[in-house]
Amino acid sequence: MNNINVITYGRVSTDEQADHGFSLNHQEEMLRKYCEIKNYNIIKHYTEDYSAKNFNRPVWKNLMDYVKKNKNSVDMILFTKWDRFSRNSEEAMSIIRLFSSMGIVVNSIEQPLDLTIPDNKVMLAMYLILPEVENDKISQRTKDGMRRAKKEGCYMAKAPFGYSNTKILEKTSIVPNVDSKIVLMAFKEVAKGVKPVEVIRKRLTSEYDLKLKKQQFYNMLKNVTYCGMIFIPEYKKEQAETIEGIHEPIIDKELFKSVQNVLEGRKNSNAKFPTTESELFPLKSNFICPNCGNQITASKSKGNGGQYEYYHCKASCKIRLSKEVVHGRVQSLLNSLSLNENVKELFKGVLSDVINSNTKDAKTRIKELKNDQESIKIMLEKAEDKYMVNELTSEDYFKVKKRYTDKILDIENRIDTLKGNDADLIKYVNNSVELLCQLGNAFNHMKNKAKGSFLRVIYPENIILEKDGFRTNSENYIVELMTRFFNNSQSMEMKKATLSNGFSNVAPPLGLEPRTL
Image (cartoon, rainbow, N blue to C red):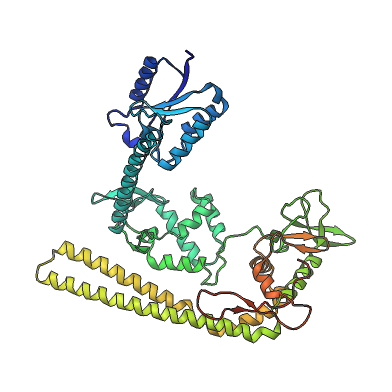
């Protein structure tokens, strides 16, 4: 009888280490004794401490790599129980089928199954599904528990920069540490709106040994935790909300709002993150080379008694065009994309309809929110009445009051947002449509950095810069719709488009088809 070559596999997750019967040593010993009795030859033994919710496990990947390279010398893969193998029934069946196609048997020594017998697959499904259900229950309880803790103002994650994890009244939270001074300085400097954010970050890095990278620094400036709040994301049917945390804030709410205004452009400032775009060559990040596909760069060169500016490829490609030629072509291209005068008034009417529709929807939602707010105020009054007649303890009353007050404040913020979304938008329609009629002219009058951003709005993907013009890798449907020209005449083809808002379902294809695309 030929020896059967076996790979044995043991697994625990961190929370199972202390449980009897799950230790890695115990599993290895059981597998070894079983193979001795069966006269199986163990060629490899793998162990790992990792969750079985999927097969994205480091040691399991090593096992798979070994099997693929040595599949002709592997007959069987053994483990103690099926939940050591997997707690994901769908992925487990897929792996079993894969091994079966290689002629390799997968089995448990404590729950053995002959999978050549069809009925045994029902038992296999039970062995695999029950651990998965248990995992799901644990996961659900963990999520629910963390959400309840967050609603009580606890901070459940790793402390952000400037804070350390701690306990406050036996609840998981955070406390400011020595780096909180750097956080406060950062917010105060950005709120001024004078210097770019990256300049501020680099200065703090140099002077105070700040460890945050560019994106980490930006994320810090957007994090409501620093003003004493806890963000609770949307979950099931519950909406996302921001509540007061039990931790001490590093900055006040007014300073946080000031920084958000600066970052979102609601306050005139220079506090924008620097880009790779050059003031002198604002379009270089918009173009790629048609030969090698690399990003186009730009530079000055001297010659004939002067300096000349070029867009060109870094490689040995022969793509090299003067800045004046490229910018002139872009302006011509945008002129060809501009909205046709014949349908300008129709376009204004469509935009006005959409804005009016959104305004009506916003008014309806505001009314609903105000009703909700009144209901909460009534519940708060009832809680006050119960407190006055000693039906509520002082501690319970103030908890209820805080919860209801937070909800009222949240509704007020949402109402303010809805009021501001479409306020006075209708007066901007004429100017917006006029701009669409003169895209080339608008581009020509923009400051350098704005030109690149403007072109990126129209062509989000890189444009291929060729000697004789431009082309794109994919069609821009909006551009095509706006610039369709039917039979070189002034008549406009009307293209139907179903709109989800219930308004006009006719969107006119406008303008001239760009000749260079």
